[in-house]
View 1 (cartoon, rainbow, N blue to C red):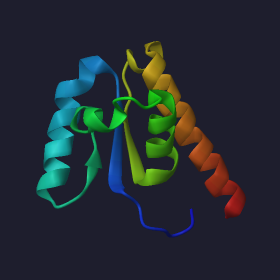
View 2 (cartoon, one colour; view 1 turned 30 degrees about the vertical axis):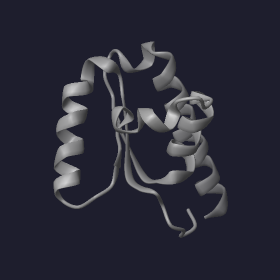
View 3 (cartoon, rainbow, N blue to C red; view 1 turned 90 degrees about the vertical axis):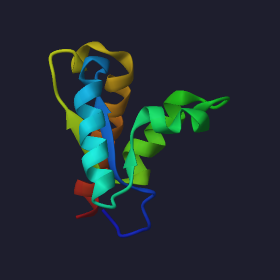
Length: 98
């Protein structure tokens, strides 16, 4: 992946039942001075916008790393599927440019 200024150091992708774990990770990363995309912290930005386009941008371009909390529920939610597809697309682009 080419070097550019990322808005976030990490973007967290997780299913709702794993929110408590995601919050703990967000807090630990923030305490280390890292910027983290955690959905509830940015709900105000999503108001009035196409949520799927917004999330695609976050997971495919705006974050240096994506941290996925895999669980049985992860594959069962529509939003996590969109996030996963965005992350995979990013990886494919990165592999082609390497």
